[in-house]
Amino acid sequence: MIKKITALVLCFAMTAVLISCSKGAETAKADKEPLVFDAFDLTYSSYDSGTVSAFGNLCKAVYNGESEVRFNLGMFDGVIQLFYTSYPLSVLVKNIEKKSDGSGVTVTYKTDADDVIAKSKAFSNRVNSILSDCGYGKVNEKALAVKIYSYVTNSVKNSSKDGLTVYDTIMTGEGDSYTCSNMLEYLFRQGGIKSAHIIASDVSKAGWGITLAEFDGEGYLFDPMTEIHANGGKQLCYFGMTTEDAAAEGLVEFVYTNRQKAAVCDNPFFDACRSCRSWEFGEDNASLLITRYDGEIVEIAL
Image (cartoon, rainbow, N blue to C red; front, side, top):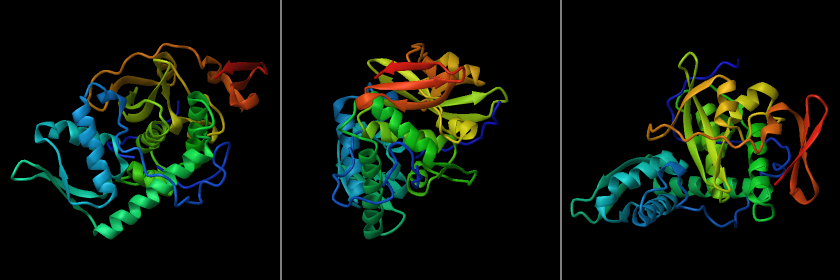
């Protein structure tokens, strides 16, 4: 079984090496629309609309290097939870403090505002370029998920550097299981696909990060870093897994970032991927053609 890498980072991933959706992602498209600021981890879907709106306003303020954000401080804990579990640019922030008059928060940064704005724009351009190259707006969400997953597994290099964040992985292409899966989740959410971060353990209790995503109300698990280790990211063996599939690779104790037990994923829709030797899209990206190790080709309608 592949050795799992221990990490505690729950932040977020990448440089470009190309396959399937990746062609041209290195070139930033400066006129792209900015990020979807209120996209957040599915774990916290029970949060009310006011908290989500305040979270989005905080994210947008950080993107623009602003020092003050107004919102009802009764929502502070929820907003901060969303911010640090779902927004890669949180790495630019030094501190967020409640204002003494109760009107909102004061944000301080690790560098000056001009640097924050420049890094935010570069990050936005990178994310939007990846999504564009992966066919966002031109393919359905399952096909988009395949393209994004393939981009991540073919573009991220495993690294054991201390303190890696998802921001680092997206911008440099170096990551571990946590930041690589965080990257996948963030790109999924920016593409309109609901996703959550899952923390698992192997039999030796070493930590490992994987992704949960929903299609048609069903949950599936994704392990991009194991894909990278196992086959250089060229296959889909760890794409769209059930909980049982993930357990078969040696993972146990699946929990969300709030430490609650993760929901069981039991839909075998992508079962043919478990024995994937190679893959390609069918006509118009409407299906996925999986060539199994026994030579049989299985078509999965997307």
